Image 1: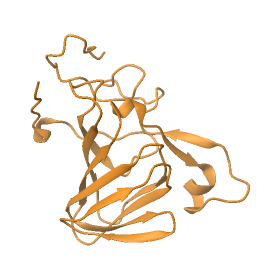
Image 2 (image 1 turned 30 degrees about the vertical axis):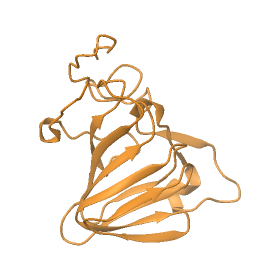
Image 3 (image 1 turned 90 degrees about the vertical axis):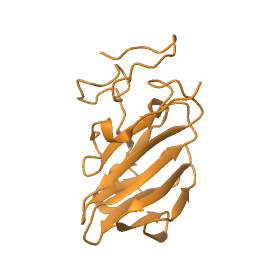
Image 4 (image 1 turned 30 degrees about the horizontal axis):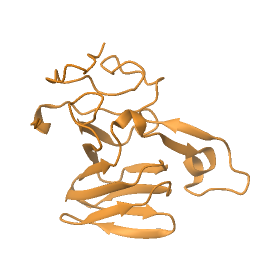
Length: 173
C-alpha cells in the first residue's frame, strides 16, 4: 500500500535537547503504514546550530535550501541546495546554518520508526562541541519518553499518528 503525505500540512515540532532545530516527521512506522525507513524535514534559522550528537543509525541529509556546515567527526562539509550527505552510524555530528535564509533539509534513517532512533550527546560535547577524555555519561535527546509534548505518541515523543489505514496502527493520545 502506498502512503501519500503532504508535509506542508504537518506542524513543525521541537524536541528536548534539539530545540534550535524544528522538524516535521513525515514517515515513521509507528505512525504511518511504512517501515524500514524513517524520513522527515528539518530546518535551522541562520546562525543556529543542531548541537553535536550521535545515534546508532546511519543518516542521510538532502539539502533543499539555505547554506551551512555539517561537522561529521573531524570533517567539515559545506551544505548547499542539491547536495546529499551520508553520516555514518554512531558518528558524532553537528549542523550549523549560515547565510541569509534558513537551512532546510530532508533527513532519513534506516529504521522502522523514529522512536527507534536514540539521539545521545555527551555532556562534554554539549558544552564544548568536543568529547573530553573524562567523558560524561551520554544523555538522551529528542524523541525520548520524557519529552513534554501533549500531541506525542505515548512513550515515544513522536508526533501524533495521521490516521493511517493500517489496522495495526496505534492511535496517539
